[in-house]
Image (cartoon, rainbow, N blue to C red; front, side):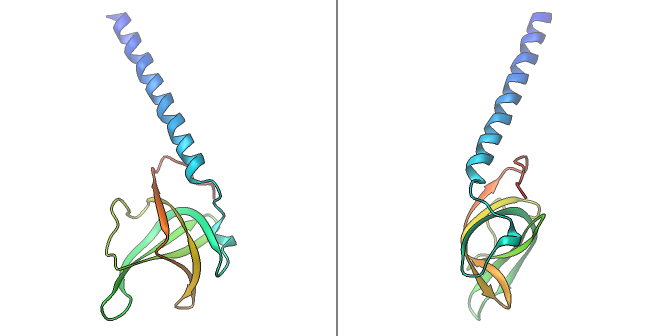
Length: 128
């Protein structure tokens, strides 16, 4: 029985190490080129990462709804707007998200409209 228990522990340790390595690799690929939110400039194409701090469904016009997220890192926050959406699968408060798109001024604040996005596992550490 001791041999079986030792092998089981070794397999579990190997699996945990492989998972950690996979998450680190995913983080390196997804977070390449990310800048702090505080450095975002109007009309620039940027890639930022952060945690979803707020979500709301907001009317954009008479017949179009939008899902508005506040994405925040340690340097600041940015409004992310998805037109025509009431929800996005897997995205909820506290989710780690990488968004890539052009920054615009919407309602007198910087925002990103319909960016490309990638949902990250919460165990992947954010750079900022």
